[in-house]
Length: 224
Image 1 (cartoon, rainbow, N blue to C red):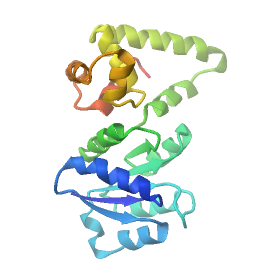
Image 2: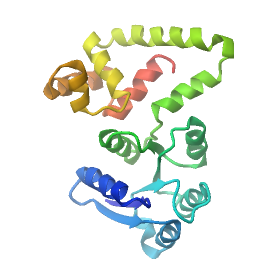
Image 3: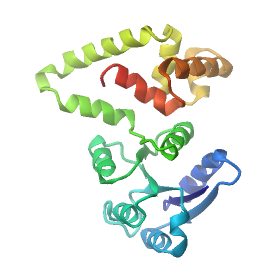
Image 4: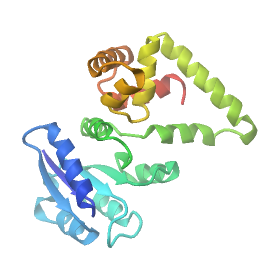
């Protein structure tokens, strides 16, 4: 597997490579530290061999999302994920509409990033939970937002309780915040092994394959 990582921060690049190396021993990385280098790579003869590209939105030499549009247009079959320090749902919506297959805020944990990458590589799109919440709120009149959110929250928990235990709902709630197993275990006062058992049960109950799909499925159940 060949992955392009475009980001001007060396620590980010090395951290992404370290986590994505878990995809398999044959994973190969190509790096771009600025927009000019990125454009040279995507217009080279070997560009068609990339399986995935993770692109930082704010890179030296870039003008908003022009370099993202360039890679989507030049390599239409490539799976593309945006990495960004922004958590603006409106920006996420714009970039996904442009043709990106996912948007991962840099504040998210490495485990969430890996799950999102696996989802995108399998043919899905990764939409951060906050964007789903924003889309729901945007359709409401201001006077009804508070009561409607409360009703939606109650509806979500009522439906989830039919599928999951109280403890599994607690695990899912922390999972949706992007917390890794270690922090979930600490917050709930249980072992990491117990967290893994709960996660396996959650995946089966929601008929999903990974952490990202579990969060998305839980919100769809509640109509979010």
